Image (tube, rainbow, N blue to C red):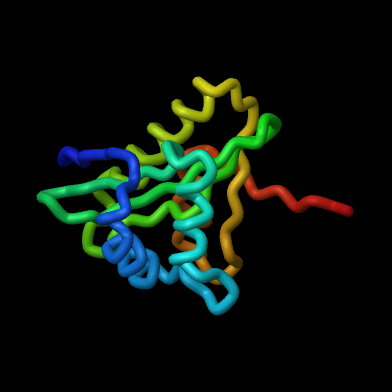
Length: 133
């Protein structure tokens, strides 16, 4: 497996992060990536990680923890960098950091249209759960 440099997000990463999210199909009309980044850097900034390979930003993960559940958002790996274990590396790091905070359970949401992401999460042990009212 190739080496991925993982570090906390910096403001200088913004353009590359937004471009990656568009490339990965994570941006929709109802979520503004610039606003989402702004909100994250104000709350639990250290739980927003970026991954670099050969000097290029190729991956992101945004975590959250509210005391009961952890959340994973904006897990992204550049399309030409997939199938190399980078997504798993980011998830391992995110899960470990949440466990260190005392997080007992991690949730994430995947759009129905994103079958590739759903399969990735299944392959690393996440299960689909439907929540009733």
